[in-house]
Image (cartoon, rainbow, N blue to C red; front, side, top):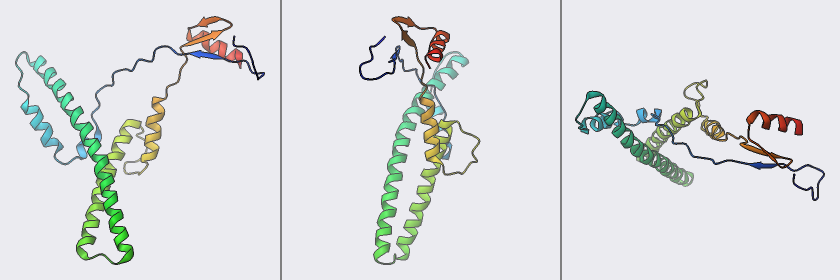
Length: 186
C-alpha cells in the first residue's frame, strides 16, 4: 500500500505487463477499387509473378508476393492521396482569393471546377478508408462523416485493461480477482 501524503484517498498502483505489438493482418482496402487503373495494375502484378512447384504452393507464394506489393503501393498511394488533396485545397484557395478581387476568366473557372471534382474524388477515397477502418457499416454510403469514422477507428485502438494489481503488498494477476478487488475498492 502506498502512503497517503496529502489526500484522504487510498492510492492504487497499476502495473502493466508487456505490451507486445501484434502483427497486423493484411486488409484489402476498399478505396483501392476507386483508384483509376487499379484493376490493370493488379492484373499486371499478378501476371508478373513466375513461380514453379505445386499449384497450391504457387498460389500461396503469389498471394504473399502480391500482399507485399499491395502494402507498398497502398502506403505510397495513401501518402500521395493526402498530399494531392492538400495541394488541391491550396489551389482552390488560390482561385478563391483571385475571385475576391476580380471575376475569374472562363478557363480558370473550368480549372477550379476540375479541382473541385478531384477533391471530391480524394475525399470519397478517404471516407471509404475510414469507414472500413471503423467497421461502422450502418451509416449509409455517401455520408461525409470522416471525423466520426476517425474517432471510431481510434477508439477501437484504446483497449484498456489491467494485467496486474498490487493490493496490500500482494500481486494479483487473475482477471476475476482483479475485478473483485476493484469492485470492493469502490
